[in-house]
Length: 209
Image (cartoon, rainbow, N blue to C red; front, side, top):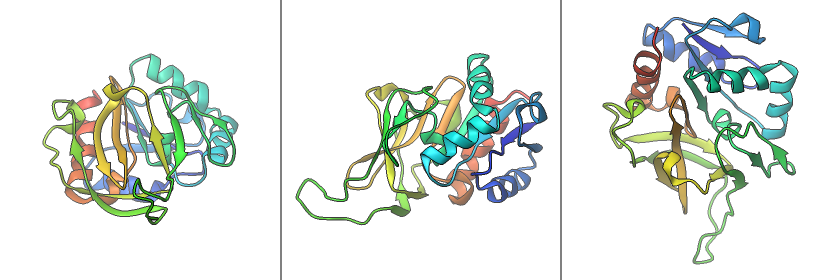
């Protein structure tokens, strides 16, 4: 059983429909007690980083997520849910994150190295560059195009957590992971074949149901 963490800022409908297409059982939880017994968790996210951290705290999910990661339970963060796993974000002023991955969330500069401006947010389909295809999450995943929508991007000093990147005027961490904790900046539930394979791998390979 997959627990979908519902703290009021996730795209729950599209994630749940994707799991239904994969015939994977799930349930929503607005409080930790409602999904305490699940085998793995998805942390979705849409919106602003400071609001999301406040909502996680109000719903009691900050210690819950940290405890589950420490216990080795698989967790998959999606979009803003990925960014929350890092140490801090500059969005709306400096805000502390969950600190489960090293690094900070910063805004796309909007100007490339040649001084030419580009569109922010990064919105649309970009091709993944797989860096660690041997990881269980990436089994049978190809270097396909996946769907991004974000104005802020991860900066991390630890390249070992980069499973895949994409290019949008700079190297964008697309999938990150370490052991049982994985995440993608793009929306797998909206990313066609590659995205569905990622969700299936998480739920049927990483999660021992």
